[in-house]
Image (cartoon, rainbow, N blue to C red; front, side, top):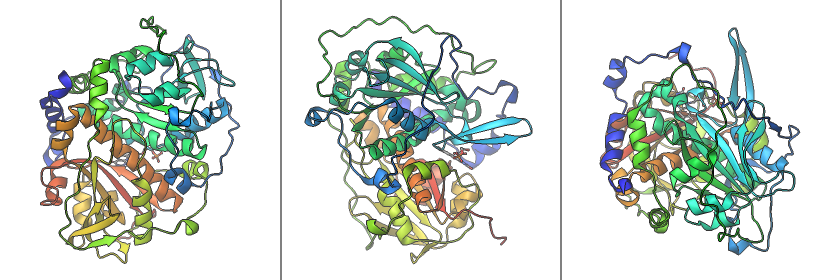
Length: 517
Ligand SMILES: Cc1cc2nc3c(=O)[nH]c(=O)nc-3n(C[C@H](O)[C@H](O)[C@H](O)COP(=O)(O)O)c2cc1C
């Protein structure tokens, strides 16, 4: 089982680190003539238009982020919830749809509901469903370009999908499953081999919105990351090398589980033509090797892989803990999740103004609430916060304690310059009111989950980051994802972070022009 050979994840991780020198010695340039298309186009298939007059749940963003909705499964059998096409259109729009258009002299650029590194949008969404009130059973591709679905296969293929995920209960009971893939070249064009990490961050951002909007509809849902990659790739018609299956989201609830007795084990290939992304695609062997080595190959391996999710203990604090002080639920802004997602954008300039500890606490609290996932039982990422201007918190570097929802001061001081440097010398990292660094103990994670644990840590970081965006915007604050100098981040937070690996960064603060000093 290749998944257990974690030298491959380590090799990938080491080879794709950013450092002061790697950035300065890179000869890579953006080949604009060979830029990949941001949309997957099936020229032979007619679009089934999705309703553009979308319903609004009106549910507040904090309820959408904070409320627990059960997972699909036998415990919910009395409640049949087959999403309507309008609900699916809503979730697709507010997670992966086009929410903004910018016109510039050379043309138009489309921004989407969820943030995405470099606005390269590598993630594609497919839908596998039973007969729904207004959509026949099938396997569909979602196109944000014309806001439509294209049917790749007719009929109910959920039994095939459930078998590919070792009959995970949510997949037996959900009428709809979203399949998320990455068209790797779209982001490798810019980020080269490091793009594999970005695939999971970008997918996590979309998942954060999808789970929040599903919660707003009170639709049972569950994230599934344990599956036989080859079978899922085959189901949605992707090759697993250029386009990679990353995650599944089970949605809704049926009164009966699907029957698995008459599963069709042999499905013909999906052979629809697809417009090439660009003139030529540059393969990145490190990505292919890493993805192949983190595949699960049969049902037994899937079952064993997810059987006992990792439960990590937290180290005892070495300094008094400062409890978070989140805003009381009754005082939280009530702006709906739809309105916040429509307004969301990555902050391009932070004004170096303070936010309050209550605001930071609220973002950390709602961003780190557990979500249902077949292979997780508690967080994999540890959060370290450089508080630059969080009133009345003393400026300094803090470690976040999940279980006690509190912060531990590691060192005090004004670390704006350090944060800026750590975030690849980007001003955003230093100008934010608080910059949150995600680090993970990859030694423990890979020992437990094999190479696939690497995917999981990156994906979880993207989901938490996506929730930070929504919580920050709901508070009328700004946020942006950032990349970083890997080993310098670990060194900065050591000795506390010794042995951990930098996974992701989110900067939080007040948008606005930067003061000149
Ligand atoms: C995973 C991730 C990494 C990002 N890294 C950076 C970064 O290093 N620097 C930056 O200025 N913006 C970064 N961004 C912000 C993106 O550039 C932004 O999301 C994208 O341009 C789309 O714009 P929007 O978020 O305003 O919709 C990142 C976003 C994500 C999701």
